[in-house]
Image 1 (spheres, rainbow, N blue to C red):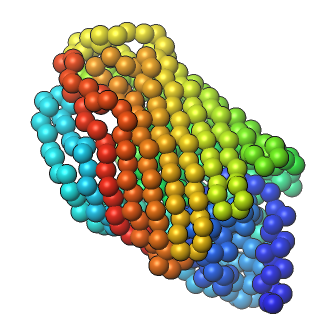
Image 2: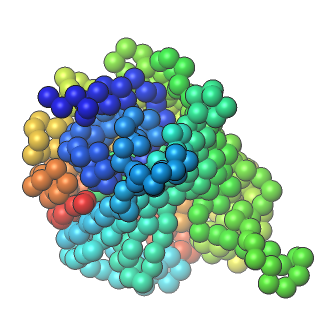
Image 3: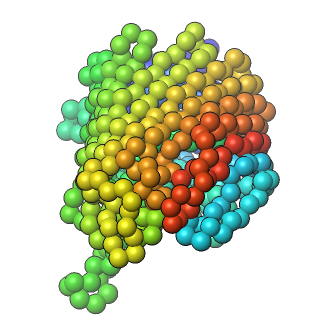
Length: 432
């Protein structure tokens, strides 16, 4: 038994919960641990992996992994902390591309999606309480020649010695519930995407209170892709606006462990662009007040099976903005819709992981508006089998069943559930 290695593992189990991101193989290299120390089946975290994240992505002996430069106020990692994740798939599907305005169709019922993405990740502690984390994606979903930075934040885990964590940067609001980057399925947690609570720029405060956890945050509310020149003072000023209005989105989650079940209540209030133009494809000149409320549950059964449930209720006030090029057939001051998902992961041994994910959403008041938002409707079941060649390399086979009836074009535009989204996917997911 290696006591210098085991003692930090035991100590970290006493740490509290914090905002999660995906773990990376770099941590295994740094601390000379197997990926299985943190992952029940990569990328899914086990209990220790969750506590590692809660300890600001470091072990108590983190300082031993830095260069000895004779300066106690400098803690540089003893190597450049980088990791890579890559995905490659073959997919057969019934869905296709249909131009919303013209109806022009691009159909490929078999598709080589390789590489699906190549991801570069990095993280390291910079002081006893300060850690950074980021990843960038190259050629995501076939977009060769592009790089996008998604998670990118710096976190201080003990503000004014209060045990409050403070995180600043880009992150997913939905990570307060179930981090999308840690799912075992290729299929997404769709309601998070539809409700626009994924990547944002902002800040988060979080703390544990015994069996309770609280996270509160503010974000710009316009995603991570916009920025604007600041030119009102004059020519070629260097700074830029990242937000597009004076409002911020406020969100929070209160979590509690009740026996074997974890329960969470989520809420968000803020603003988003209105939609206008043909099929609602254009950005309006106003803002829509949005409110999101949600509940989540999760737990484990016999150590090998984990389950999780999420439901969100959404209200978008005055979201569809009439204009000269559109006359929405169904007008409402408030557009209410809801949706959620149910997932089960079964990990019988170190080579196999079996997953099921049910996605459901009802477009509600956005139905029959002849806009792209009719497409919020979804009713699918996804079954996934992952075979692990090694701890950090797996093959995946996934089948998606669509239970939603297809709809014929009923308005001026090609919107709604025009085709089914059944698919069969095979491929590889590796990290190193």
